[in-house]
Length: 422
Image (cartoon, rainbow, N blue to C red; front, top):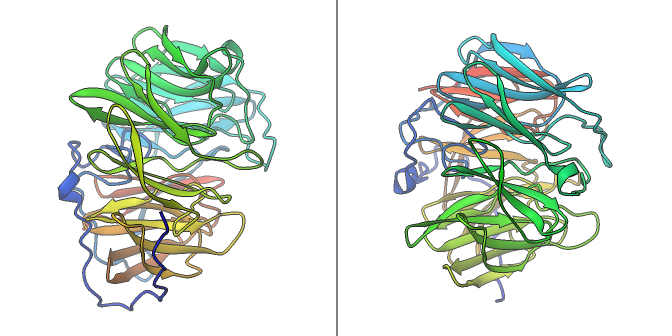
């Protein structure tokens, strides 16, 4: 389907229409204070409905609550059950660390050996956000080590060396697809051979429950899709988008998404409304909007634009998608709003800069890789920048986490907690 021509214009200035990010329309069930996995309660970048953000910041930026040094890696933190969880590399060890969200003080540490060196770039630490599930926390290291730890003590309950066991390649930057927990299963985009592209393990024991496809892995995290009351897994691999039955791993359908060469699929698929999906990637891949059910996915519109993002997962709100079009490593990158129904570009802020987005309390927070933090209201009519700050001096590539009015940001060497509450 041919896309309608984009309408290009700059963001309006301060005082414009307030954002209607319709968080209540798809309100997550978690309460404020919970950010238990990648991209928040429902893996869509939207915080719980009772999260409240300030409408402005002091000139110096939001008040820092604490700051501490961290090791290497681009994994954002998870916050759940009164604990924070950090996954980073110190020397030749990948370290999972529980900390007090209010002070940053370490509660416990657990580690595992690593010899990982990336094929591209200089980052040698883990990429995947920890996943908290009840009294357990799971991590997925750069060399494919899947670990399950007791969330209260750090005691290792089980571990699987998925790359070694399933003959998976490490890829350009190591394993980077954060696992998904569905019921009593943890589903992992392993990328193994011998029908081990996607593997499900029992959360309690770590035993293999099913393994399907021979798809190589991506850096995109799988998401839950419930169809007819039955859980399914929507997953983007290196070259395809698939829907799998969660219980048995049966592939319901798949279609090509991605291309060979030095490319990656890294943005998480989103479900803007029941029975509808949206995918996006850079490197000339572009985006796809499709209706789907248990039996098939039917593309509604697709193309190289107007939103082709390297790894920023877009925010879906009130029939529109807000995202950062472009790449971190090849500027420029633009902030865009597109109509989810048609793919029409509504507005574009050119040279906004690359980064990641989260939504809460009718506002957008952009954590840009150049270190700038931007608080905005945005609507299909435009966006109103409420505040800007530079709370950390380094590069912000790790996904931010928002919990009970505290924003957790991680750069190359530090993790900071900021008071952004109303």
